[in-house]
Image (cartoon, rainbow over all chains, first blue to last red; front, side, top):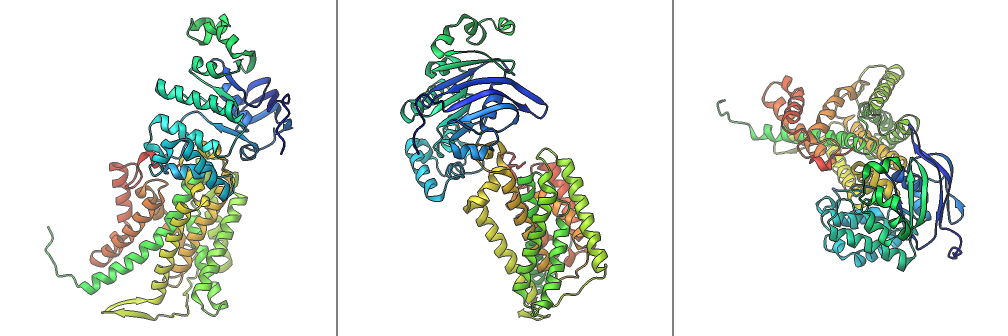
Length: 251
Length: 299
């Protein structure tokens, strides 16, 4: 397998329309993301950020447009097929098997792998996140919020994804744990060349490690630009980085 | 308080062994029900008919296979698992996870269909099933146990042990527990819900078929035999903690013992009531069941 050409985007959305049984939430979104790049999705409640992540993973209803991964149209593929291609998705909220041990959760993380691959990948995860090795025999539900977030990320990283979709990875974590999560994400992109597309409530933390920021409004792309520029854009500062919230609705 | 009476130890031991066997067979039935509830989020009202199908398959397989117990048992189990696979492909697969009410109607329909189809084809006349063991048994100091009961108990213990190993030691079984615990996380790790649901249906119906087949030489085989048990089985699933398989199985064994003791020492009328009284008490005092902590609740 040859690595993708540098100028070929890893992920490309073309006029993507997606949503749920009740109807579409995204009304035609296009952008692309290259390997090793981090993009943060911004937007108010109901703008379609989580819907977009789910659509890239194939976890909701498709209404039109296309999702391309390494130039290949994957729009019709199911989530397990997309995971096998190298797309990992960590949904919002607690996403582990609370009554299973940490070790069992990691075994489930490697569900799509062959036995030998799985065992090697789990060993690598335990080395990378020593806290999981220390708590391997404990029920996942007994771990702290930060530890559970690390576990969930490890469960997805086991498959060796090249695109990671993260929905609110720092939600409910202490500031110190948030910083650790952001450092881990940044490390994945810089060192392993993983592309990351994330939704975050801690925008300062997220934009600080992001290359690109994409602003969604009402299911459409409102703005896309380098994270550093978007972070200082007066409209964005006003709307999402602690300005007057009522003004955001007018934007 | 009642007057202390001298209880014949042989009689008490006999009741205990009978109760244990009954409880083990209940455990086969309810662990499958709990599994289906956890993985598919449905209550299978047709579960009793899978039991009945297992009993009839046993009744027909035995004469063909020269009354050989074990091959007939395995054949009946396999046949019911196939029936379960068919029911999944035709009906259960079409239920979405948020369609609990539809699942009740669908499985009730399936139950009535199977019951009447068997009644039409085979009449309601009860069958007496003979095996290689006949009515022989062993005598343990006055306690008499027939070989069919010993074989049934051994098969049930083995099957429950294999079920436990499957659920805790294999990826196939872990995936079932995973889906029952957190569907979103199951999607995250790439588990295909439909494939896991099919496996759960096959496993649950095979266990139920085994219970029916093991029951066939012990009691009369008739089309309505599953109807008798199904509400008792639901009560046990609730007592054990919805979706908790060990909880349901333990509750089942306890019920078997309790029923046998009550039937032996008191009036047999109360035998059929005890499980529902227990269910009502559990619903009032421990709504999550005896063994189901809220966070372990499936569905």
